Length: 86
Image (cartoon, one colour):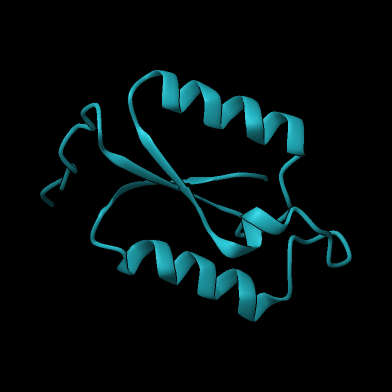
């Protein structure tokens, strides 16, 4: 089986941050975004991640979290996807 590897990220590449499970801690999220931007990456957040709210122990209802992840995969500018929370 052939292993498919994506191209390496370069400064200016866009990274999407999504919350497919639990929400991120706002301070940790801000620190992580700052780190990525210092390294020269453009960072975009999905709508669920921007809201930083709780839906029980999750970031949002299933449909909203799935839509956010789908948005990141469909966005042709996005070169990498990072989960904001566990």
